[in-house]
Picture 1: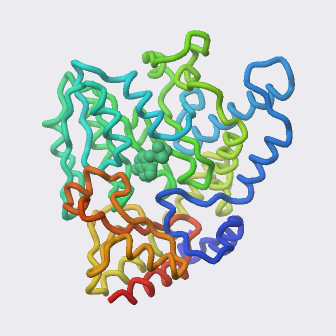
Picture 2: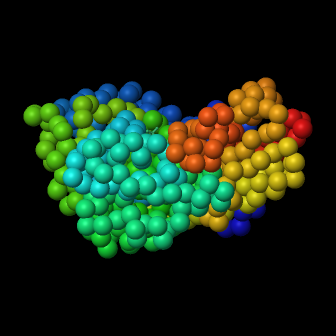
Length: 395
Ligand SMILES: Cc1ncc(COP(=O)(O)O)c(C=O)c1O
């Protein structure tokens, strides 16, 4: 599908929040949700829910919701339903898994491109830490360095599928090949990447793929997907009476069942943004590819617009990137720019956005970082134009 054929009007019409007139360019920090997600959550509550594993219908409904949610997330990332761990968010799940995977005596490789949620959980395991460096000017994560970073003691290589501030999509398959050759596991942070195009965790070489539904039109739920056979080899901290099966062993406490139904609805929504055929996985690949092409075409307009403004500095120029731009405006702090844009009804983020190491490497963390504007599948040309007009006024 050509970017010009992407049904942006229809997609936008499914999001009630977009009718408030704001340009929601803050999707990288969390997206709005379509009506179908809101209704799925409300319907689940209306239907009567119980805790899982009981003898009565309301409990059976929750059992079915959990199973459907695992199947949906597996379809989204190309994984197996039995390997989908559900939890409150990616950070919590990554801490849980990191403790189960690595410890003193092991080595872990983390990168300065990553959001801190795929850094600190590993550096705090007590393992020896090795750092993959980022080029602070281009924003690229050179692959070659990994050959010197991994060895037979490396337990895990943690790397992002896309930077949450400058959008860099590093060559994860090549990094994974180096890691696997040394016998290490690969833990991919897909939180920022997932909403921006089709995902195939196997093609990425990801042993673990982490994602968060609230970045792709769903509720605030995180998931980590792995092969169930790999999960069988790990023993996370857990309560004595809680299930010891996989993936339940990794899920602490009681799940927000209604929200999990919202996650399934969000996946169904993503699969249906453009007309498609086949099973849900196939329709997801078609729909997300169309959204990606549309987003990238719109992003070119955004970047070209900012490039013409001498008072704007953009950070990073990676070859492959999501539609996410990070910039400063001469004479104004990032917070001031965000406040100015907010008055014009344009929502953007400012600061380091938890890209702690990357903003440190770029030398802008202590001065307040920069402004982040990101496009997702529901942004349109008017959102971009309003941002550009707003920034132009700051000259
Ligand atoms: C790339 C990336 N990784 C991890 C996270 C943390 O995700 P969560 O809020 O689900 O813990 C974020 C959140 O912004 C992110 O953008």
